Length: 150
Image (cartoon, rainbow, N blue to C red; front, side):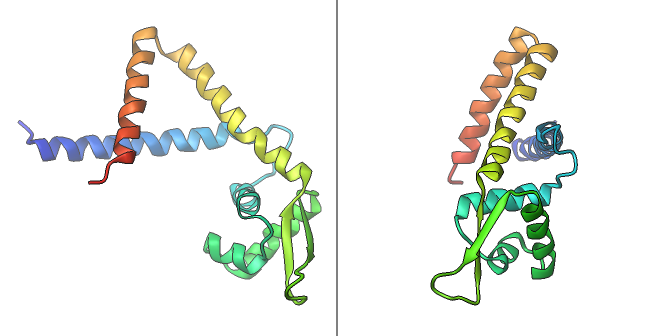
């Protein structure tokens, strides 16, 4: 019979595998159909620009842990699609500040809705009422773990 810590370790490993698989599926289901060419690095960069406000290519590269040249390519792609705008930095004319355009904000706003729609439909179709209730309890437990100060 497994000890409490062995059982906790097994539970943690299984939970992590399930979360990774669900996260990957949510990513796949949330890419808008009309933009099949978007990469997650482009969408994550656009999200960072929205979250951080006007920023530079160097700051984005640092935040995403990529080379400046790689980030410049991502920014060029976002610019070509009209998802970002740029203006000279008023404090340092050598720098350019990048912001999300209205179109970029609208694109990124569709992603959480698409994820929730897919997950809701899948839960309704794949799980019975008892399993749905169990999943709701599991979500509460996962939130409890996330808030834990262990």
